Structures are given as structure tokens and as C-alpha cells.
Image (cartoon, rainbow, N blue to C red; front, side, top):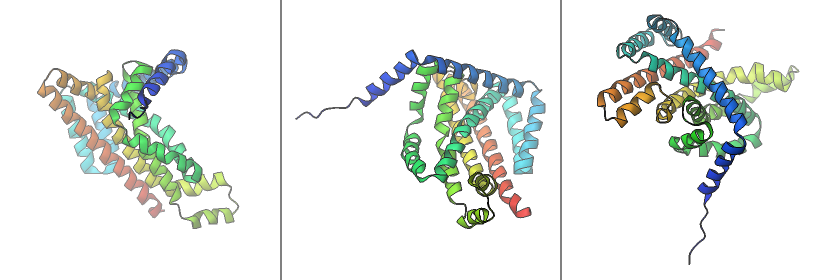
Length: 282
């Protein structure tokens, strides 16, 4: 007995193709906006002399993560400069910055809604489970169909891939705010918006910042994969080394990616610790 088969992939492919043909105007507009955003961020990062940007990044690392991370940041970025990968490193940083910003603009508000509403939480959970278990390569396919090759599909795919961690942690953070604090706010006559802005969000901020850190790391990993669709940056260098079987090109680009990942992780963790210590000093 032959069981009937379901061509789910065929229906999804047909839907994405329909979008690319009949609903192309919003995607074209989004592509223009994303290209302009990444171009501006890249211009800002590449406009000052490289040594000045190294010093500025070192000062930011010192502010958030201490002297050791600042020294590593300066030495690591100087190493990228000496490897003649400065432009690629800054482009990767710009891609991570834009895609992370886009992901957080979606994830944090939705996480707050899910944290305040049980129905929204129940709807979001299976969707987030699907998004987090889907292989990252799959995100690149519809992005390329809708936006062609280049930086825009890389930013879109990276943002979508990076949404689940900050959304989940924002949801969790809102739900973990002690009910006693909320009740005290209501006793003093605060409305729901005031309770959210003055009680729940400040109390949840360390966990939300942890979600931001996870979002940055997810975005960095996806941006590297996005080198396959013409995003450029360090991911593009890795792809070039792979396609041409040039071990040296791939190795030096991989080292630069590791340096960026460590810097992003240490600085974001330092920001979390700074936020956690802040309320205790007051």
C-alpha cells in the first residue's frame, strides 16, 4: 500500500516565488534601506585611521570589560590590521551591528509581549523552537530568492537567525520579575505602562542584556556563513579560501573571526556585569 506524500517543500517554494514576483516592492524598499544602512555604518568604521579605531575599540572594551579585555582588543585588532584584513573586519563588524540592531528591534518588543501575555507566549514557543532547530543554511535560500545576492539577504537572514535567543531571554526576564515588586507599584497607583517601564524592565535588564550578547554571537556566526551569498567581509575571505583551496587565506580569516568573537563576547559579558552591579551601588 502506497501512502500519500505531502510536498511541503514544493508549497513553500511556490509561496516564496509568488512573493518575489507579485510582492516585490516592499522587498525592494527593504533592500534599499539595508544597503544604505550597511554602507553608512561601514563608512563610519572605515573613515578614521585604522589605529584610531583600534584605540577607540580598546577604550570601549576597557569601559565595559576591564583592562585585560582592552589589551586583547587592541592587540587582536592590530593583528587583523597587520594581516591586511582591516576592511574585511570592519565590514563584518558593520554587518553584525546592522543585523543585530534589526533582530533586537523585533525580538525585544515581542519578548516583552510574550512575557506579559500567556497566549502570546504559547504562540511564540513553537515558532522559536522551529527557528532555533532549523539549519542556518536554510535561512539563506529564501533570502537570496527575495533579495538576490549581496549584503541585504545576508543581513535579513542573519537577523532572522539571531531573533530567538533575545526574544526568549526577554520573555523569561519579564516573567522572573518578583510579583511583590509589581504589586507594590500597583499599590502606589502605577498603571501597566509605568509598571513595565519603571519596575519590570529595570529588574529584567541584566537578563535582556544577556540576550543581546547571545544575539551578537549568533549574528557573527551567521554573517560568516552569509559569505556564501556575496556578503563579503571575513566570511567572504573564508569562502574564497575554501573555493580556491587556499589554506592560508582561510586560516588568517578564521583567526580574525575568532578575535572578533572573543571581543564581542567579553565586551557584552562585561556590559552584563556592569548592569548587574549598577543597582547594587545605588
